[in-house]
Length: 248
Image (spheres, helix red, strand yellow):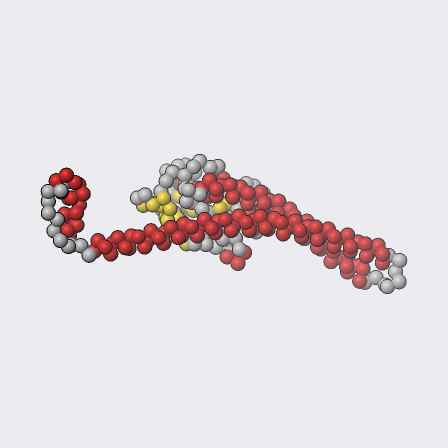
């Protein structure tokens, strides 16, 4: 079952907090992101409707939805096309993996790259589902051809024709499997890059946390009066030269 928990982002001061399914809460600079198409941005999953009407300024609902972690797709949100386009191709196949192509990275420094990866995933998934459909059809045809061949008498004149039918299905299935593996390799390359970006952000957050902890520990060693004197000395550098600094 898909994980339908809400993943909301918030901002405080010059930092922005946002959540993802793979790394939990991450903190990024609260900068203005570069403009990207709305359908490839996580903002497309937020709609405002006060009193039942779709207008701006009202409370927003978050439609962020991930696939189960067992699928391996930890970075793709369900694209807004799934709900906004009537009879979109992923919807025709049900709640499958093809609709989860919206990259969930909200760091302003990587929004542009996330948009490009989301666009690539959308194209890969739309083509991949066509290949998968043909693969399933061919596999079912191979099973049926093998059944017909195995149920024929050994001395049947139609045995060669059925053997050829099985060989044709097998060759076509191998070709389709190569195509599936190629598409999957490209998809995994995008997921690997997403993992790398989030790991870098997580490392930055960890180093910032250590720095803040070290600063707080150092400041706690000074008395309030000494901290006030240091602040006054910083604000009055010329007058501070004639002052005698008290020892710690």
